Length: 380
Image (tube, rainbow, N blue to C red; front, side, top):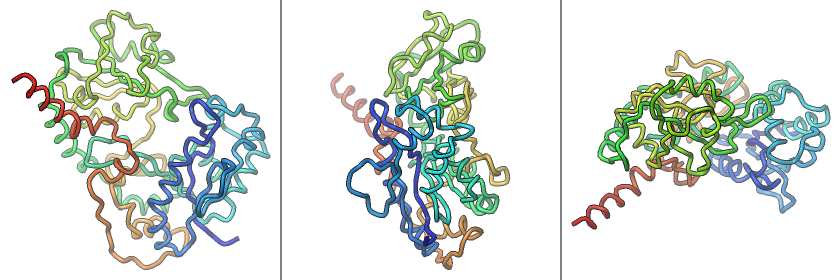
């Protein structure tokens, strides 16, 4: 079989309400984003492995029988089954063999948000993998990537492209300055901000189940203290409270707020940001707040290049767009072409606009200025 680079992702995740591929479009998006620099760096074909949905084959893709995998793994074909498989310590022999066949011939697998079970199996098969994720720091001029690998030599190349905290501090300062001119709907005096999340999130999986605040009541109560009001900001896609009303807090202590998350992070009164695994908890420290994870952080980001090691994620701003970046990462694994020194320049918000995912940034810099101007005009 001709060596190839495989682009894939969480092949197993279904839609929330139906057993259809949830990550198919994201994998195809990522393939189109990086196939050119990967091919230029290696001279190898760059193909995808996707959940086979029974339609016509995708360009440069191999279909994976996800329904058959669930059956072989003895898991129900639904969200609960996906949660049980996401970080399963082992798989049934036939299910593992199905995944192994899908990756056969890969010189390296570059994944967009790989499931833990995929990374574990690839390591067992001796196939190098690089896992690319949307980074939790989302207050800057664009989205960026958090990248991990289990290969020490690849990590050494990745280290050269890791953005340290100094890169993000001015971005946070600009956001803090901007939101200082956007008053909250009601004055904020509470020191603790608890943040909700979507109902289904890979970062919420622990021991084969999805967590919410109701599962972490003692830790939540310790984090907010025994007295005083607590702010709660629900996720816009999950307004039902994310379990906070069943976490043992008196309902009279909870004040729900609808203000933009960055407006809340910019309030002087807020001293602590608390969540299960929300990216806002990771962002809090850049705004001078203490971030408290009640669950496991979705990513462990190295603050400096020297601190980056296996088990941590590197922060890659835009280097991924260049073939030289992939040459640096892949040179220890396979032959690569000569460095060309070319560094593409992307416009602001390139990934945000491409993915149609803004995480509140658009409200601050696009929507709220119009709303404020309209309110002032109406008051005249």
